[in-house]
Length: 151
Image 1 (tube, rainbow, N blue to C red):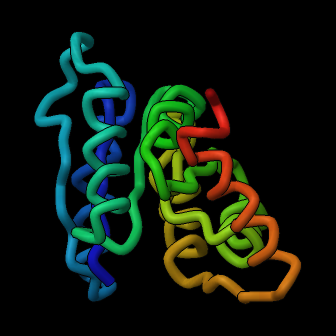
Image 2 (image 1 turned 135 degrees about the vertical axis):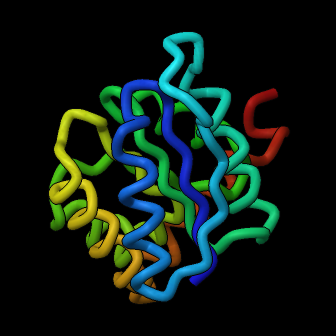
């Protein structure tokens, strides 16, 4: 799978080990940064390009790590056709894809490598189940992205 990964300064120490594991697992990885642990690096500078790449079809799924995952999730969800979720456990990572067709995983930098890697593996292995109720809900979400809904 072609995946994108981005981190802010808080998650910088996790990026290279995760990129190595993703590649070892057979994924093609696009690194969206950050290139350093500079505190001037903001999550929005990296979450938005990952989300845009998902929306454009340049990558299949995106992974963003930041201090608490919440800001990155909010930023990523501003991009049309992106369904980002801040996940803290394997169940939410799997359910987010199965039920909501989540395409960007946001992870807080607080976990060490192994918990982050576990979430990523679950996220990438999960598949949207295409149940009628889930498709119906996603269609309603897509309508919210239409300009006339917001005036």
